[in-house]
Image 1 (tube, rainbow, N blue to C red):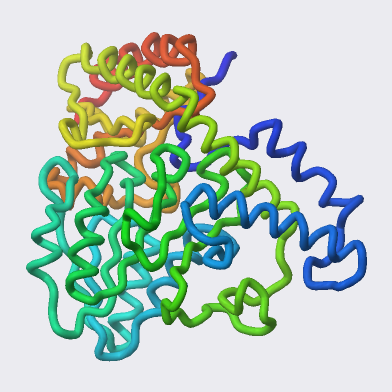
Image 2: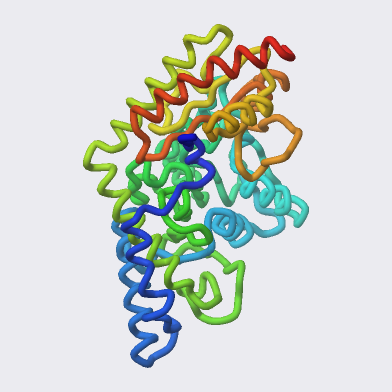
Length: 379
């Protein structure tokens, strides 16, 4: 059975070029990048080259890039490294759980937190951020693109609000990186985080942009690695893979790849919307090219995920971080959906290597699966 993977927002496969770039650093060039001998310097050169690639990707200086283990560590570092007891954090109710749980923990430690809700289309109104400002506001944290709906947030305008309020601004760009051009100067953020495995790089590695002069305490302490922002021996093969992944992502943003993916997503949406009782969550809002979150009335979403998997199509009911949870999506609930509607929603997120044949196969199996479930046990 030919399988079609439509869960790119959970993770992506390595591209061959990424694997090839990483290969020498598992065995032949295995040195510790902090060692001064030749094997160590070979590793250090590879890390420095990857850092330069990420800096070009983000439009920053390479001294402002620090490598880490990925999006969750980056979010935790941004929030715990910036906030103290008595400080005020403004974030949104639709953030990734890495931000939401860190914000809750910061509140337990004496910070105050305001969670701003979205409009029904999933967009955050920048004026709600402005209205939440206090004299104690130290940090504003808003994601670039939502991992469940793909809705792109007005972070450039929010960055201006943060700058005017003399507050620090953090952007979780994990789901936007590789799908949207990134320019930290234009976004006016102080910290921005990305993760390699969301853009055809390896799992377990990511990067933080930290603007020069930003007072950020390290989450992990020990050695002086990564400009003292993240202690621990660098994972050289993974860092090399991230560097290659962002180089390929920059090419994809320039060669029309993401425009083609958007066409595939639109074809997928149009075909599914021919099924009665379906609608797109976040329709009308700007979204990343690869993501469609679709509600199927009278269907239990988890049952549909399983039914499609049996037919060779991998999709998701929401964030992979909540796999197995019986709770409906906090993002969809915040957008105003009731629990049944949220549970009846699935996320289709396409790889940048997706094809028209992939979409056609999905459109062949989805109507049959929906009809079967509605007939078997309508919700």
